[in-house]
Length: 120
Image 1 (cartoon, rainbow, N blue to C red):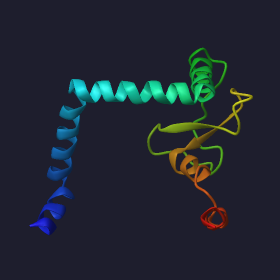
Image 2: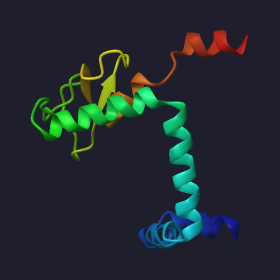
Image 3: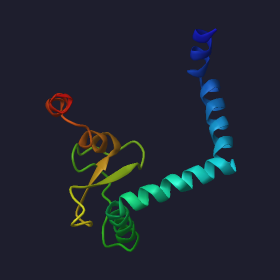
Image 4: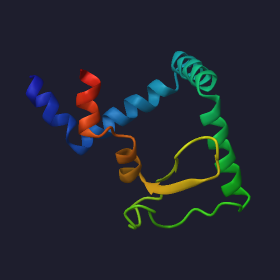
């Protein structure tokens, strides 16, 4: 039944089989072609974002920017090394805040008042 299937997918075995199926799907040529097409489209639409991201990656690699061990907003050390750099704007691409994933996602959420204004 549908409910039993949903419960099974929440178990470790169910999650593992979903991951394995997704891993196999990502190996298919049509998936790779679609992903490449989407990447090129994004690069053409947002060249300034791509350039800023590349500049930060190169600056970190060569030691011009140092990635801190903690989030610059909540001052917690993330469980994983998943840190994101957040640009306030792209006119100064090397001025970034290093945030944990949770704080970075909060930066990109609209405030509730703005959501209501957008609906009108």
